[in-house]
Image (cartoon, rainbow, N blue to C red; front, side, top):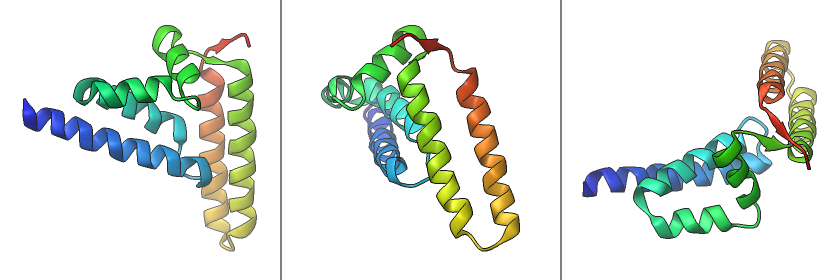
Length: 122
């Protein structure tokens, strides 16, 4: 049991770190890592889980996802904009055509995924 809690704690901390990095790095998604961190903290550390679920940056989105499996329309719009901006910068900066095409394909897939997530009114 201690090993299992330790595994979830380590995975949760790693996911939180990657999610925070994803705010600035275009190819790292923020939301899935924060959701994974919440899942892992729920199984390993009630203190960290409570902190994450009440954190001003993440609480509203986590509560909506937990109860409705949906995100607010405004947050979804921000996700579209941030995703497009970060991928656009990457596509402009990368010199290789095949990498640009790969980034464009990843952008398309991510936008299609975001599109299928249900929305809540703001």
